[in-house]
Amino acid sequence: MQITRARVKTPGGRTGWAVTAFLIAVFIASSMVAPPVSGQGRGFTLEGLAGGQMQQKDLDQGAVIVVVWASWSPRGRDIVPRVDSIADRWGSQARVIMVNFQEDTATVESFLKGKRPKAQVYLDRDGAFSKKYSVTHLPGLLIFKDGVTAFSGKLPPDPDSLIGQTLG
Image (tube, rainbow, N blue to C red; front, side):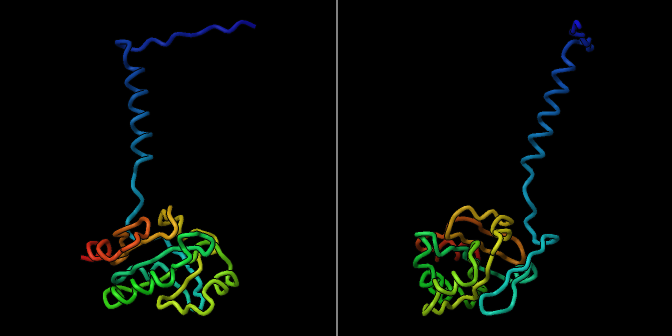
């Protein structure tokens, strides 16, 4: 069996390169499309540690400050006093909540035993909430304004100025 290479002639000899460059540009542009900033069409439900649920609609009105954390993270050991400080300072202007990342109820209850956080605690058991909002640091900080993600990143040691600038 003999294999021969066929040559494809293109007008001007450069059309093949132009088509290839165009396809590469389309591929790159499509991979750079930003995710939607509104929660519309992206539902979720998180179970509350003390009962109740948090859903997308709970982020769609007003300001909401979310701290995503895990008890196994060394930076999460002091999460309750850190979030309590946020709730004390910003609780009159925004709803402050804690979302635990991928731990079961018993583990979270054991970690919080005797700590009584001022913010409601919700469980992101499968990590879908954290993935949806691209939480890449623990503890993570998300700030929503009327359903739009206004900030997503690492919870800084002193978050007051960041929260103040974000909430305006």
